[in-house]
Image 1 (spheres, rainbow, N blue to C red):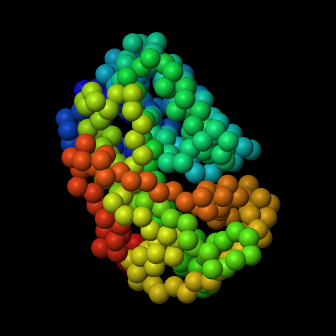
Image 2: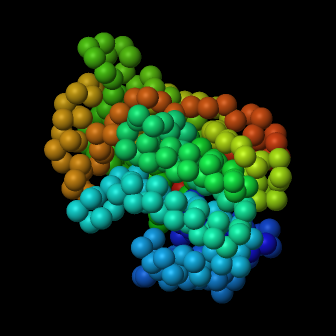
Image 3: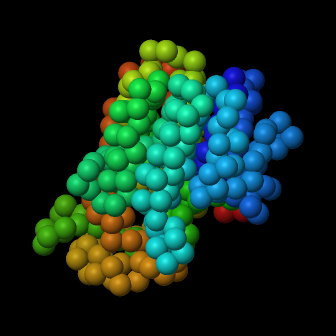
Length: 308
């Protein structure tokens, strides 16, 4: 199967490209200029150089394919650089969906996110709008909404590696965020980490599973962990023992609202909001349906965090 893959050089996308090749599919990738070196086994892929503003190259990538996977996403925006959630999550997805319709390519798989909603953060609302647009196209769509995705980033951006660099490597206690005035609730929000290999396997299997058409799947690992447990597990994998301290979010959100436009600041106001909402789901039935034995979130499976 010829598969047009958008976002094929990022953290998750590289694993999807690898899984496509493993299952004898033919990946067609849209790759930004200068990112050609990030393509997994480029000699086995059709690589088209361009970006989401390059409509002709998008059409070239999609044309003659049998299916489309849209996996482009960002975790923070920089409007002055024209890097926005609106442009990447919604407009980019919308254009690729429209091109698929134009060429009569019915199968379309979209990477969304767990917890998306119309009235959420800009990240959540733009993902939600892309979901809704795809659902109303008449295409044979499947939407996946993962929780926290972890795994060896191979030089890309990944949550656990980023947390280690931005928080655990600092000579300060790790903050246990809480709202209001009750520190006993600090760090109680939870996530359901899922391994990137499991996500990639499910995406690729869905391509040829008719029963997945017209369905939305929330993807999370077999266990959920609160923020305290996450820090402990990631710290252990990183060879550290980290002190923790309750941290009210009001001053953190205030600082983020001022400095989040600068790349050096580690977190945005919306990211704090989404952390406190939690991000859990039960994917037991999904693992059964896709015949995937989930990889657990453990220090052993976070070995890539160990000191070199």
